[in-house]
Length: 186
Ligand SMILES: [Zn+2]
Image 1: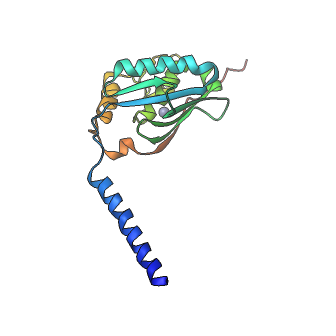
Image 2: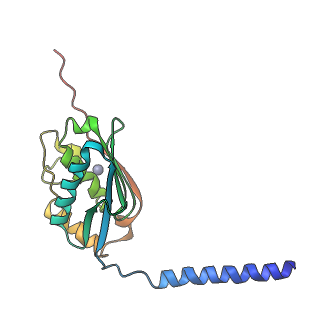
Image 3: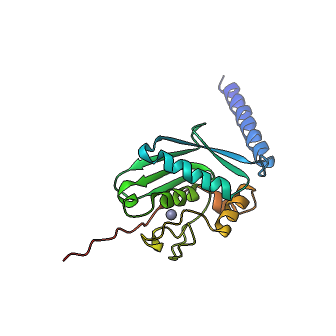
């Protein structure tokens, strides 16, 4: 009885390993365009901002399409306190959190497109350049640019064509610095 169970276990394990082997040997074509369904049911008053940000990314890139409320590859949340951030579970999948306190000082559309940029594979680049979307809060509160640069947009297009390393597509958490601007006293 025991040996029969062992044989069954071995057979099951072999099948499981073979399945894994097949998956590794035959990855899905990376060139297929991806539809990223984003969900704004938790976005409150920022739902329309999310729609604007999706349009900006759709117009700037190829190989991907952000589409509203067809699923939940990307969930967008409106939060208060704790800072805006993005949780990328894999390229094109994850969660974006927009902090109302930061949105009161910075362009909320810029924050939204920036955070979605993380889900689309971009890292932060805090160099103070307002022409870049991924410079985020380093460009100051006067920077309202909500459009990715050509280089940023092309990088996303290339990522979704499967031409960059696994690092850009990996799971990651981006806790963003949109520093608060203190009102001078006196
Ligand atoms: Zn960021």
